[in-house]
Length: 216
Image (cartoon, rainbow, N blue to C red; front, side, top):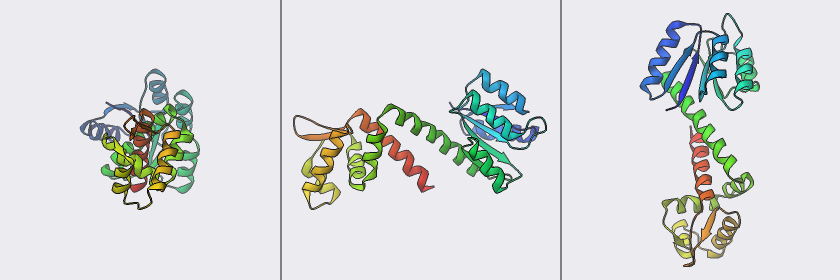
């Protein structure tokens, strides 16, 4: 279960958001001030922080800076009723993952939370593989389609892949298969069939995250 910290000086906002997040399957905790948020972050890991930009004790940007200092990888979504371009850009420059203006729609909020959590998973996956190989495999549509095709878990021979991709020139497919194999994304069995390696599975997961992100 993902942990989310709500930072807002408005008690009603904290209570209503907590209820929404708990119903959506998250564990929610509250902080009624920037100082309390900083203390909670220093004591416990949170996956996402929902941070009000304007609070009476410490400015939201200052809180954001401190949160990122304690937990550089933490995802922070700024929520504020003062939706200006300048404040949004300032928050993003300081490390915020996204920005939502009040009044916001619950669906929009939950979608944004889901997306930044997927970004975390993508970042973790790319750390486990050679990023150059991953980018190489995703840069060409034929290689992307080969990776997707082999995601079924079934080993496939060259001509099966050619047929399913609908490409007449089998030598072109063979070239991309060799490139993917050299990158460690796919492997070739003794029976001359192809399948994804463990690194290939991670590349596939990264591809899915990227496609979901850009399709929204």
